[in-house]
Amino acid sequence: MIFNYDIQNAIAAFVDSIRPMGDAQAALYESILSQFANGVSGFLTSIGFPPR
Image (cartoon, rainbow, N blue to C red; front, side, top):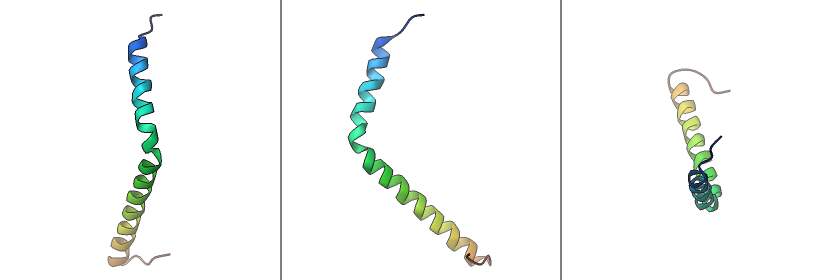
């Protein structure tokens, strides 16, 4: 089996470069998900489905 260590090292370097932004990415994901859920809930309420 042949390993391409250059590609593995490049992937590891990329992951390490985005690691400091992990908390910001998680907050952004949570914010977008919350906005989407609120939008869908508002839409369903507007077309006659009562909120629960």
